[in-house]
Image (tube, rainbow, N blue to C red; front, side):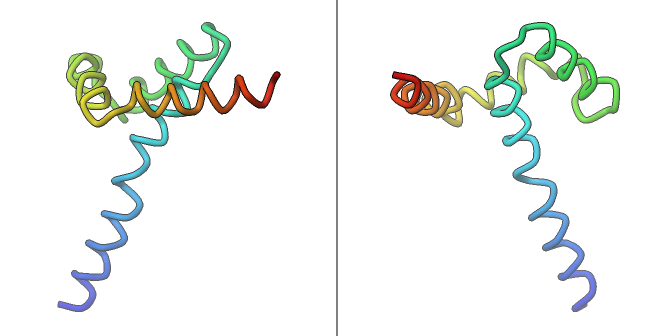
Length: 81
């Protein structure tokens, strides 16, 4: 039971934040070509299915991704000025 709990905890900690960080990272990319390439790589590796892209994007937006990107953009703009 201890091993099962430990493995489940590690899987949750390693697997849960990765897609969110990936989505934030992709949206922060300035180069459209690089952004498209990275999205293609995530779908090619099976990290995301092309069929699920719209629902994945909507879920990220429902979680406040656009607001978070706005905060990062405002911080970036303030830093550049």
